[in-house]
Image (cartoon, rainbow, N blue to C red; front, side, top):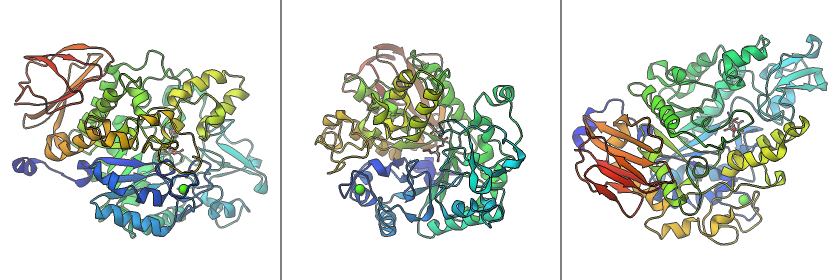
Length: 572
Ligand code: TEU
Ligand code: CA
């Protein structure tokens, strides 16, 4: 172990940790109002420590009218009362640090809530001192050029405001007006706010929709053809190419992040792997890490909004994307990896198989993939238990504005809302937002009141209490893997090499330092698979280092893999 440490350059704590994402609204309710909160989270710090994770990403808990579950902030420096108080956040920072765990807060700075004092002032008059904090288009200039909104019943990113006979820009909901980053006063206000949280002891930030902050303020017309040819018919690819984006990210780094032992992880919708190092190459002095959406676009038909392909996804394409992004950071920069979060469905249902006979093995296999690839894993709360999609039947079951507004839009267009509801059973964001399943009791140990969103009925057999006592559970398997990462540095810094790229059922790769290391074999299918291990990879020991099943069928280098079986072998 010692020798290995010496050889590795650019080691960093944030390359070695597993990130645990906590969605506070659905984690633990402490006062029976059916909404998860900070005192509830504080009561679960020992649980989080038991997972072996090193960094917690907390979704927004700041003052918010809560139209987009906290991503519409009305005050960046106060805590939303239903979540708790500033004292609770202080206790969270102290409590996590006392357990050797660091904390990331969510920085939502592409937009604010329309209830933020800045916007309330800005919309009052055209010469208000806050006017240029946002993007306004005076009506006398005629209709503004089309811009697409992700959360709007008309998909229109411009909203007319009679008070000043003008339109304002909102890439997300109308209650989330976009900030004008071209205004240096706005940038300085934001830098000051970030310093406020860093001075309180926060260890870094996840930066929300950060690729969208820079706008071409000439607001040129984007024709249908141009959108198709240049931007894959996807506005996020246009929105992520604002002219001064990297200038602002560099400025923010220089003015706030530089010289601090902290980490930044950017959500970067609309980028390709060729763009990645522009954001995270050390010499650029912008960000530490990012997460992209290329994997998340896999397995959709692209004929309709987030419509799952009935054929599912092709493993060869899955391997291609995650291998290319691993290679993008092979010698420079550093990547992240995830399969789910609060904007995506549960990874088990989307990428695995949540049928009763396969779900435990499948969940453990996906955990194996995330924690053995060459990138910092971002692991979503509840996935360590193998939680699945709730698959709501009715639109009234949903709480998420992305689903509710898209339903209204399809309805207005006379589209097939029933098909949309079937699609959302697989792809809807609310599938990831059902409460954490602590036990088999009526409300899963989440609340003593009525939950803000339905609890998945499978909590009677998929819950933390039952799995804590079961050595073969997904929960204890997760704990084994976080421990293994601390023992085998190859799993962190080892080079990644893919084998059998064309195999449509088995994902086989190695993680090596100076040729020695670990081989990972994953059967991404619900069938038995006969698999010949790569000849050129002699095993140190035919006994696997880790097996998510309790049996192994192996003769010399031939394996008969069980459905969703995951194996780690030490290489000679
Ligand atoms: O998401 C930004 C983003 O790109 C999302 O629109 C994403 O593409 C979509 O949700 C996938 O379905 C961030 C936050 O993660 C999300 O929760 C917020 O709703 C959004 O920004 C606005 O703040
Ligand atoms: Ca509560």
